[in-house]
Length: 342
Image 1 (tube, rainbow, N blue to C red):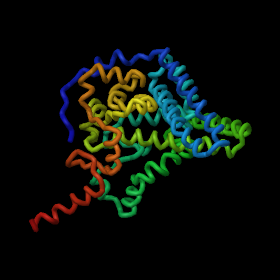
Image 2: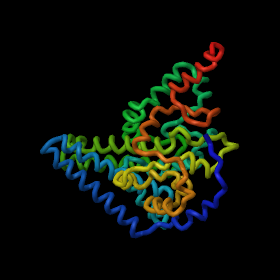
Image 3: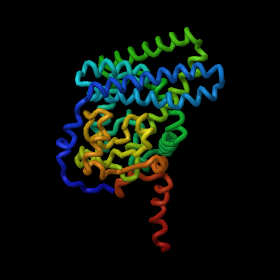
Image 4: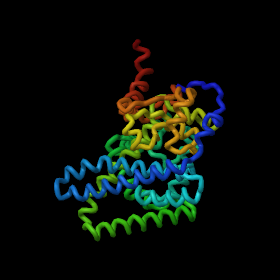
């Protein structure tokens, strides 16, 4: 349920952390790209030993792609460098490695931040889109089945991530402007040029045996992180007239408390409540901001084990102000019928 929070001057709390540090930014670029390229090369060399070894190395390689995506993400918010031009140049480069067009993604992601937790501003780009109980019950049967399939873990974390990043990101969005369209075309050409160049050097079969596991793993991890940071039982949703920015950030975005090594690979994005409160904070300053402000520590916290329970949550129950699953929905629907017998 939604908890009333005392008013806080959060702008003052986060102000000192909204500055990029050139040294730390450049070091993050070096270790993320450097280690990814090294892992890619080791995967290729491992092909002559065992493909299982190649797949094993794909795990950290996918983690380095996630770090590159976090840099890409920070550039989109203008927080990684002081210069917006530098952010845009690096963001476009990161987009090639992450198979994601920079300007189009930046535009769509801004819509996510502007309306996260607002029932009147849900956008289809959000993955996954969440229906309310009333909306779901009002659907015709075939649409209910489609929604259930879409929200099933095998689709949501099995099929959807790879389709989204391998194919979906190659398509120009209907709402995209001229710059966003060109970013899609540029990224597609750059990804194709890189793939053809590597295929020419090592062969197309070897390229696919290395690149596909990395892309599929990293896309699944990315979708999972996005999912769990907003899809938990006591998250925040409200109609537009009642929507509150601070509540949406501090209650509608989780603190995903991961083991330190996973926090490093995911670029501190588990501190998602602080990121939504102030997207201008670079990823490497999120932990310091969290540690220094007790007000920002009293937020929904999800552990790695606890996050697995979120997969059963499918619908927003407006009456009880919580996410529920289909089994819970069935039990709720049966309650009135059992009342007379009791």
